[in-house]
Length: 121
Image (cartoon, rainbow, N blue to C red; front, side, top):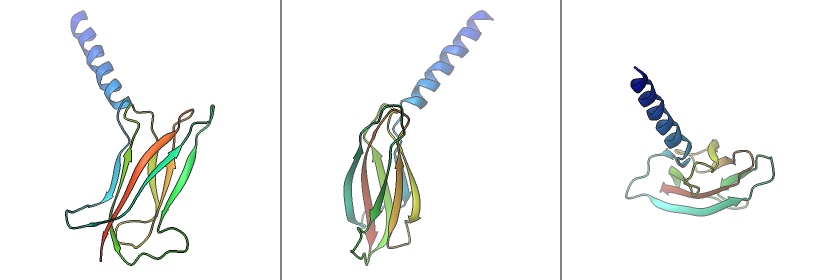
């Protein structure tokens, strides 16, 4: 009985560790082989002591126009230890010609994302 409880607690600890050490990668939409890479940007925000840092990413940039239909957005978290941030879709996205993402860190951490926007004419 004691052995099964100890084994259960050990397995639970391993599962909790794996969940906490994962990247926060996210893909919106579907990216196919014939899609065109419209934009790739590295978005970095350094930590601030005891604070949550955030930033917004927009495509196309202000003053520019995108004639392509966005098919997918890939946000790749460069912090693979689970200390990176989260990406949330605020506006546009797949099916639109614009996108706005909100990037947010954990408290007392920064974030580093590679954002790729794909589309087709």
